[in-house]
Length: 61
Image (cartoon, rainbow, N blue to C red; front, side):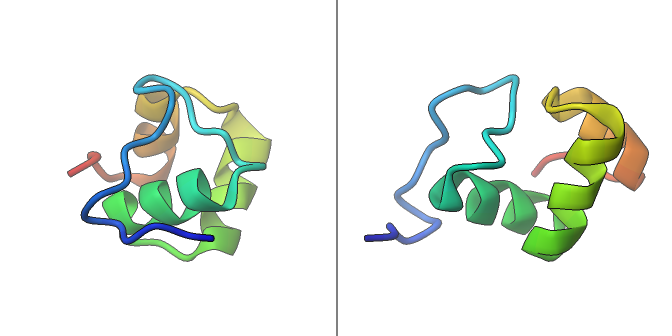
């Protein structure tokens, strides 16, 4: 069961667990991208939040 984005906090603050639907939804929302765009970014540059943010040209909110 997915939690609302307002109450959900990812398990890891520095890394994106792309296999966890709640983490994926949370970070996609933070970056303003779709889950698929986030998945592709993680595939290209790895799961570190700062690296994904730089790749997407965005900052995590």
